[in-house]
Amino acid sequence: MWQHDCGAATQNILLQATDMNLGTCWCGLHPHEKVMTEIRKLFDIPNNIVPFCVIAIGIAAEEFGSRGFYDEKKVKWVK
Image (cartoon, rainbow, N blue to C red; front, top):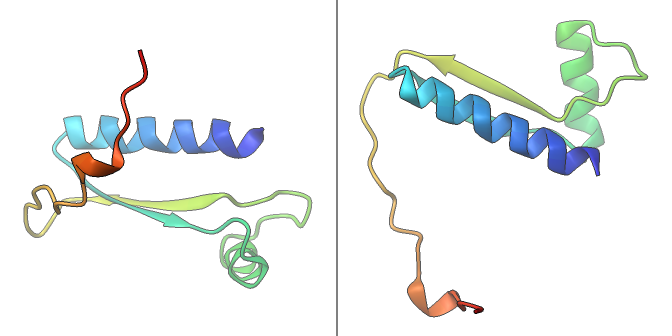
């Protein structure tokens, strides 16, 4: 379940960066083999390492708010 672990770690990095007033962009790689191969070349990552994502972190050029994807009709609360 390493993908879940990596996703949770990535989210924590994004949240911490946001708390530090930094902008972020989560660029998913796995399971797209062509993209993972290019990233391995770019960052000199050995073939036995599976790159999960790339996170761009920096000073945001503009501030983004909520993009409005939440749809309450698609949520079911279980008690």
